[in-house]
Image 1: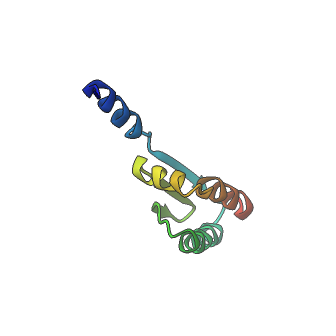
Image 2 (image 1 turned 180 degrees about the horizontal axis):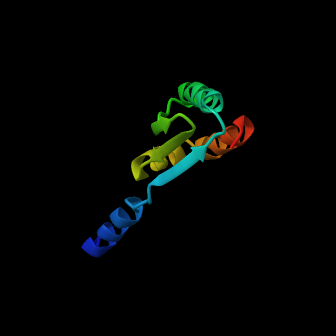
Image 3 (image 1 turned 90 degrees about the vertical axis):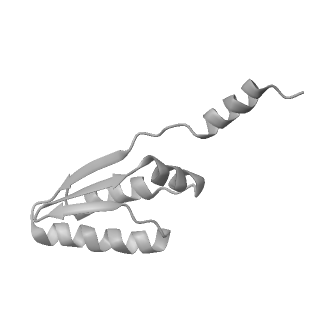
Length: 92
């Protein structure tokens, strides 16, 4: 006989809450910001994943909610690390 508590424990473990990922990238110029955003768009197309992006003249804010992080984890994706490396290459 299956205990209801065992079933609930399994469901709770599979629905673990993940804190949202939020990071601000500051750039020295609009040209650097634009280059980062263009390359991020290319990476998003390749990965078929599109994070929430807001930006201004010399910055970009990237947000990935818990569900998005779960999708990336299921795909075994290194999207976040690649995005951070991209920002460093562009000029953060």
